[in-house]
Image 1 (cartoon, rainbow, N blue to C red):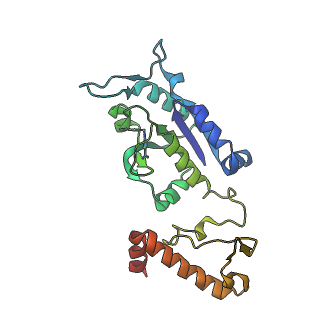
Image 2: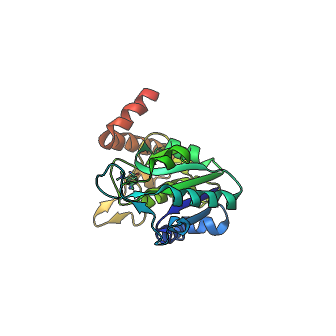
Image 3: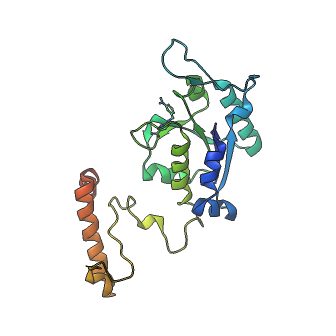
Length: 231
Ligand code: 4G0
């Protein structure tokens, strides 16, 4: 899949996208991400990309024209029309289900806002969907865009190491993860739950389900109720 990120801080995005599993996915060609600097598309002689809000009030607003010209450059280079997302605290909150749907799209354009947001006319004409990563405000849309890219990337074929299957994990079955242990079997007087050392696969699976149910009921009663309703 191809993702184009429009931002005022392309180096910040590039730094994250070059490391670890995302960096490897890009090298392998599973994921094609490009970062675009919105400031490169301003026609203003002082390279301005923001201005005061009409009607007054606090902060600055990102102007429509540099964003639009950046978007046009993306379409021209990709030779395709992307699904266009604006990262915003007003958006619908991202879920694993929505991420799965987005991961099936061939081309996504992510707009990262700053200051007090972007001119509404860009949202009206260029943006298909506003997405939030949670009910809190950040200084920019870059971290949310990187969070979205990370969760999409790990669902693409060939990105995760073979023994890691995203469909088997927490949030896919509606329950939280069971506890995990590794060697040594005793550490600082604390033992690994004995059932995990038996090699009895059915008992281990039962223990893990019990643990998942207990941690979900404790930490996320909302998820727990929904899980019970579905059963
Ligand atoms: C648009 C997304 C973008 C408007 C972006 C701020 C949190 C999220 C931004 C604003 C963001 C999120 C009106 C402050 C940039 N913060 N929860 N900051 N306003 O996904």
